[in-house]
Length: 214
Ligand code: G3P
Image (cartoon, rainbow, N blue to C red; front, side, top):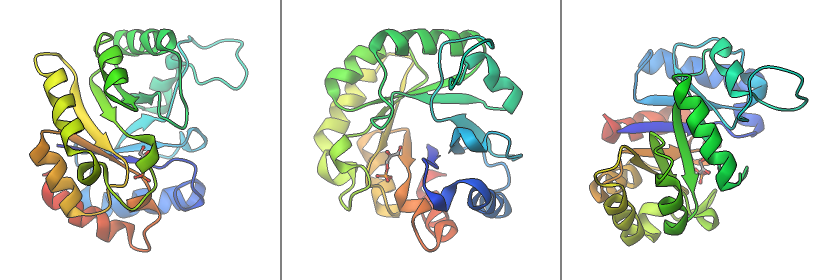
């Protein structure tokens, strides 16, 4: 099971606070391969043993682009992969296809978010490493995807069977039980943000969740 922690653009998980959170995770878990930090682009230069994913990218090589994040630059920042199409950063299907293709060719892992089963079906055709099912209305809320949408998770698991893509689930995941239920439903990873980064004790929450992840 994989544990993607999306640092988003919260004050609590960017800049010096991102460094503090990352050092806390490293102190507890070293370079645990199941933990993946999905960093804000402003924090790309934070040096860490943790596996790092970018929060989005553009299907570009380095060059004269302003305000873009070229896939071709990610390696220089020691990213291992890229998350794209988060519901807070939506992309066209064409762009998703191009980023997945370019990132894979350059050796990066790819995580593509999907808001519903229709989008899961569309995205699986591009063969990303992971597809994260995240119902937008549950993001940042109190009810987890595993509690509110168990049958959709099971459907998504079926859809991905026999493909090279693994199912990750996210939205409202806050505790060990949410992780356990996600796993029982067939998810191979979780994507969490506020449950960790907005908690007064983020490391304590991660320790609890990791009891199910490992
Ligand atoms: O990318 C993770 C995400 O959108 C879920 O957010 O705050 O519900 O864990 P949250």
